[in-house]
Length: 168
Image (cartoon, rainbow, N blue to C red; front, top):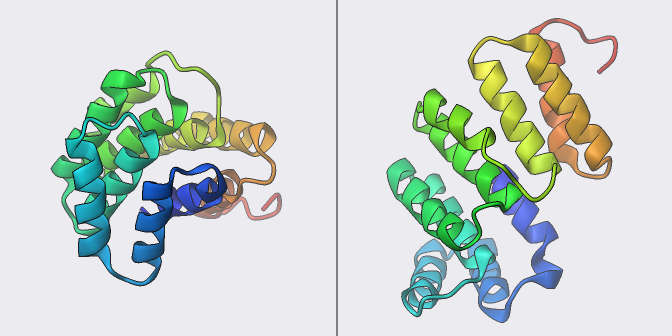
């Protein structure tokens, strides 16, 4: 997803060399090479969350929702409380029209309340037609990480859908 790629690019400074290399390939439009490089790392039993997150994003861009879900679930097996992986899984589930699965994912215990998981929580509420909890989650995301545009974007989009454009 563009959100996931943007978040990963923001983390690129902290990324492992293999993820940095794959991000460079993605930036050049060389998705197949990036995927092969990440798959090789995954095949070695990597526990680098960035490898799995980027690999899942590449699957999403290719429309392979179930593949993306499987990759993210594999990463959650070794990092079950990681809020960004949980957020990624919830986004993938929503794209695959598995709202119930996404609802269960955002309800799981997590290490922190990051913008990513709060936006995912809001997106689940939004898909269920629950505007107040969605707006609340998006607002929390903007407060949790004011510099992260994901929360602001989601909040503005939701307010626009409700025609509540004055705060936006």
